[in-house]
Image 1 (cartoon, rainbow, N blue to C red):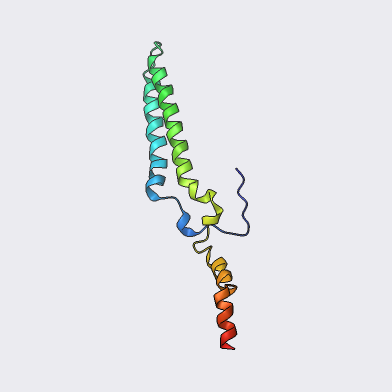
Image 2: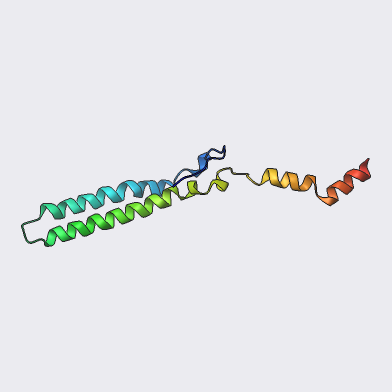
Length: 107
């Protein structure tokens, strides 16, 4: 994943949501603890091991989804500046026919 910087810096408000960050810490810890409890119950039958692998896979999937959700704002560089359209709007109004006509009248 390559993100061109184009001289922009992520705005402070683009930090991940606190609930998502909390879940990003909570889900792997709890999931791995559950998986370890299944692996510790292994007595040679293989059933708890299958449950442990399922818990690890579900934990990995949920962690990946939360990681994508937490960093998704940073993937769109046009959202990095809060007022990115201001300069374009200023340029548009500067060269708008009505504004030019008004300048000619005021001279």
